[in-house]
Image (cartoon, rainbow, N blue to C red; front, side):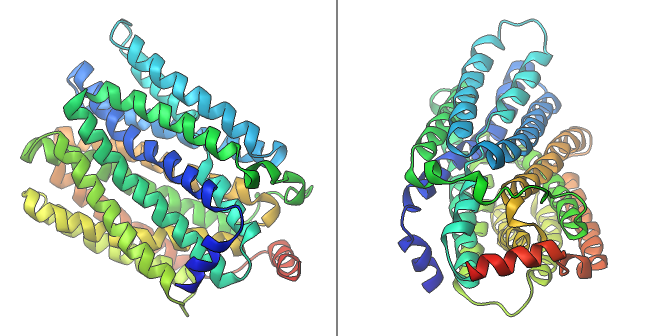
Length: 407
């Protein structure tokens, strides 16, 4: 717990953390809201899955571009600009989609909205790395960021479910866009964000290309995202088959609840295992629990605890991946590396949305859960094969790490 206290006591980090939570809420809302909104417009779950996939792909591309721009021009003005654009896209999508005859408009607008989701979490990750001293305290900071992020993801589907009942999925889409814009503006006005200087980290010639360990980590992140994307479509499909559309938000929130519990436990203790080994253990648990979800997917009563266990294994996986960046990526490109990690996960998630929509519509939601479990098993084998690569840092990273600790 001391690590958590050290982070919270660090000057200037509390308001950016709050803005990060607010900025993560729409991420938990918009994938589900867009899926259900397009499903209502077209009557097709596959079309809804394509809209969610387009949102994820746009988000991935936007994150990668924002990471490079932030490392060059700073956080505040980039975040404010893209946050305002995200809110504008949400209003435009809901206002125009019912009247535009082209059915692909909603998918294209979903991609545009996704590309403008502000990178507040990535920016906060960099502020933690630069502001918190000591490896254990920084790891606790990454765990706290992951827990707060998952808390927002847990709340997001619940807010979506409430808006579905009160005003429909279109209201959830607009609300998500406005929250993104407001969170970005709040983050960009904080002292920590305005004072952050890219010149301190963006050393010339230190990029992210050619790092084998980072490439393997990005591959695993993309694969994990694909599995999560399949689940994201399988869950509302299960809710529609076994209950109501509003149950989908509660089911997705159950996954986030498991990730929060596991994340708090992970960050509260000191681990002797390497981050790479912890990542492999988490993947093994995810494969087992995804298989359990497939078995339980014939009953909502059984599906709730199964999805909670899926989250319990997913939380440590995300934290271990973030911690690995401290040894696999140079600090001069930390924003780009983290946003690339998120982008890889989002690209995988977008593909998973499309695959999940096709599988659930043709075979059913239980088969989609089973496919997710099999895919994670493949990832586990890949990670075990390249474990040594994940645990070996390039010389430039080691040099920067020593300089950072000395400074």
